[in-house]
Length: 146
Image (cartoon, rainbow, N blue to C red; front, side, top):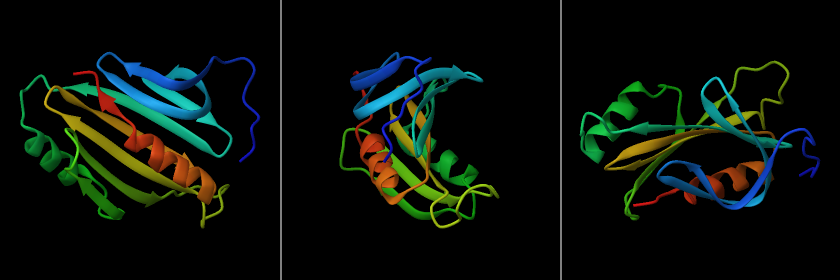
């Protein structure tokens, strides 16, 4: 992976507070910005778009998961649901419809980390196998500040 980051944007790394109540472990430096209400973390070959949703309707974790799966693309693949942590994690991949990207590497990972207080929605767009591995490791590091 190239290590060139944009000099005009803040850099973030390590144990980083995504938004109130949620943290992520960034093992490499990323640039940071807010765009269209989303937190965007990016570096060459990998971009994350992050949103945090509160559980204002007091739905159960299972109810939130059911809603997310009902709204998910029918074209998703490699779906995984991890219930081993205090938080439920859902990930799946989608091929991206972008003529400028190599079809074999231009993919996205959609992740959801669900906790009783709400959930993190994170989309990772990657351009290499190394970036894909980093994306999964980073998504797995998201945790609630409970």
